[in-house]
Length: 134
Image (cartoon, rainbow, N blue to C red; front, side):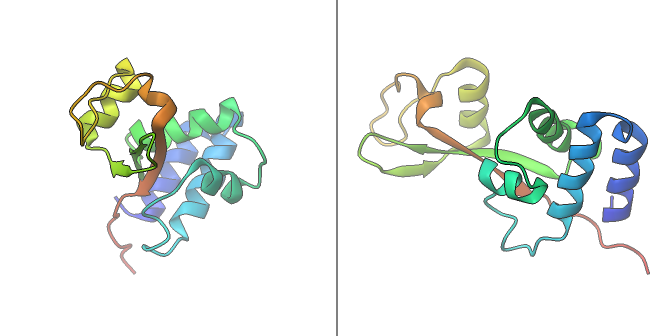
């Protein structure tokens, strides 16, 4: 799927909803980023793209659509930051366990982490899309 197809799919599915408007603004902004800029996007990055000062339910829904729909252009991930400020990028499985079950084994000590959601910084990465045919 290329950039035009992503926008077309999002438009046909979401355009007439409040979530869709944010989703399209976010997708258009994300698709303009340089590859280097698009590898570690935080919620603050997303807020800047859509020119908002707080995460709204519509932004959350748009991020969900952009990570899980057939027009997904984002991959979600997380960085664990322990009490010593040591950070470790989580595997897809580890991040999924934190999100779904609030469970994480410390990557260095091997011990279960209390309340791991409080120690994980979520981030998003833009997935590589096919180039548009000219």
